Image 1 (cartoon, rainbow, N blue to C red):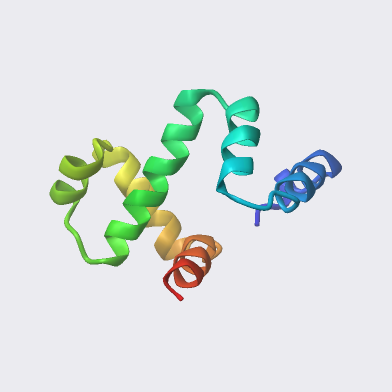
Image 2 (cartoon, one colour):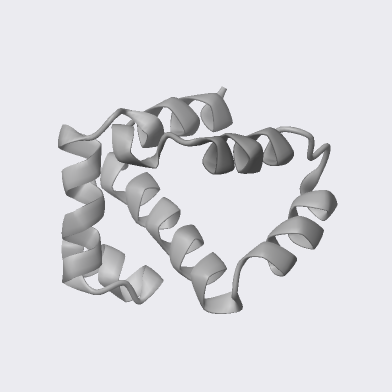
Length: 95
């Protein structure tokens, strides 16, 4: 993780997220914390990551998610050169 986002405020947010016990609590919390567009953007990037790992093409992903090629490319770059966060979560969800 990039060192410039590691700070006490982000730690507090992550501690709060880790207390959530179910999907309904996630909806309640994230609807208060994020705008609808922020939440939809985050969920779109996650769907793009899943589809990239499934071997889908940019065209298939754009058609299914509405994501721009710039977003798909950014997610692909994270998958290939990031901190493996997407892969960690995708593996856990699959298992």
